[in-house]
Length: 255
Image 1 (tube, rainbow, N blue to C red):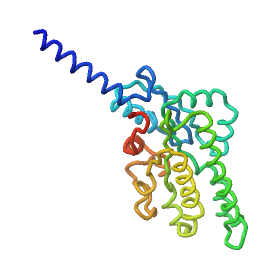
Image 2 (image 1 turned 90 degrees about the horizontal axis):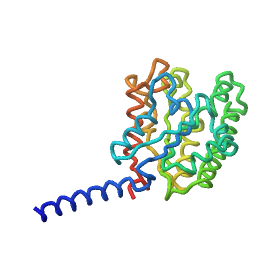
Image 3 (image 1 turned 45 degrees about the vertical axis):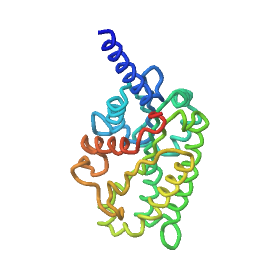
Image 4 (image 1 turned 180 degrees about the vertical axis):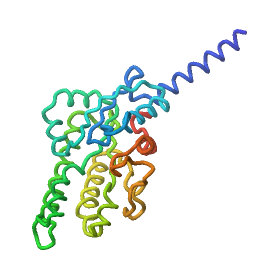
């Protein structure tokens, strides 16, 4: 009996150590998760966004409790996010304490320019000057956002995930005859910079673009995963986004 009891105790101890190792990046079996971005992570039109579902997946996979600190806002641009990162002590302290940070941003910086493009008031011979200018600003904002996060934490301590986002207006652009002109300067250019800047800093990029818009980026979002506006995700869509984040791995949380 003594040997059997000792063997059981050894197995139990090893199991505890294994779970501890898997969730090793979390303090006292709790992970703090900071969500940054726009109406997608904020969950416009739904009860729970991918942020909530991703938190549930972390809990299930790593055996930890996840505290969500959602700083995403409907309509929040990358420019506004950068300002909040620099000025909000609440947000800065949350990132210092976070084991997980997710980012979904970009499109809200360009809606005004797209309106100018539609009215042929964007400037330049090809009516794209305002989009080029704002895309250049957006690239600068991405660099500054990422550097600001790294001034508060490190990739050894925090799993930072940056979503590629998607093109939510493929159908509309094709209907208007804009798609071939705008796909590059209004999305793929800043996406490529964002991905490169994130990877250069050791962040994890969540490959949402081709998964959602097809291998050439020219397919509308599937009607089964979006709300009636064809832009914001429904429950099924948010669950899919959470699984995409999960598929990117858990980085330092697994050490």
